[in-house]
Length: 420
Image (cartoon, rainbow, N blue to C red; front, top):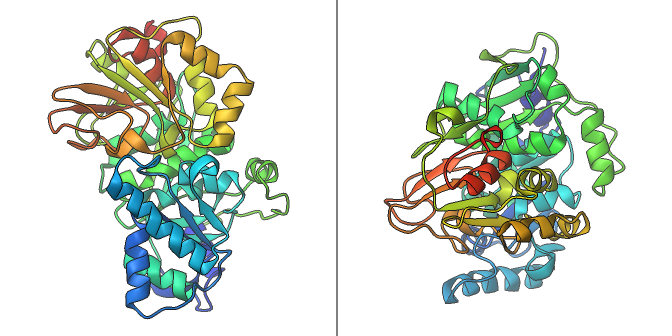
């Protein structure tokens, strides 16, 4: 039978024949992931079920990225639990301190995730790795504990929504805009327990970093996974990121069964923002321009990669951040941070009056390094804008691409780069 990308990848990880969507299959996993928030919960469940050893010390990743550098005693103890478990189990891929970064940038960058892999993670944005053609999905800490012990998990084969982007990409339109446009159309539950499979001429020419951005926010549409075909662009990315062995070609079969197809022509599209308090409350930036703001955050697992830093620097170069705005820039891994330094982007950021911080999730989840006060507004390149997500319950978050975020920092209000 003709298969979607989701069906094909799952088929490679199970001995059962996949015959239809909705089928529950037992699958072998390629990697199991947890962080400093979810890791201790998974470790507790691991011990509670009587497990003694992880199934493969090379196929577990523990990344201390959410509340680190540790902001208080509780977060320090969370890391301590994870560190001690990693030492006990001799886990190869434990990241903390100077070699650590935001997990969903770090793992593809280190070559720990490859096309065709099946990855489960105790973090909802594990779906990011679909950008390189891996079936990757978030799970609860109990399921992650079982995965760490057994190297297997059950998956219900998701139905697939095909999403196609055609046309000519305008100068300031970015992958973040493409994904927000989709969420704005289908809603935050439009892909509930479904796979989003992306294609079309615009996607064919999109960088892997852009694809990772889009796959990252599949969960914001309710999706189980967001998937991209594995092509020459994917293989080149893998070769440059410690996986020169990747030769896989992977695409959906002609005539694959899709639940529906959603199409966009982006030729005349303008950048968009997701207004408070849902990622689906999407409007063209021109409709919300002149909304005053107090903070901008450029970073996170959605938009903290080197291409995002370059985008921000392009807009900030030779300009100044408005004096009423805190512009916080967080490159998502040490590799990205060093590349910014090498290319002179750090000087651009500092000359513009930005605050450059460590490689952390920090403000995205209201953890630290940029909490919003009462009635404050922020434009951020993160992935969620729920009430209270970044601080005070009366604060507001506008989601946008790095070019819109940087332009807004300069303008002191929501703005696109062509409005400066």
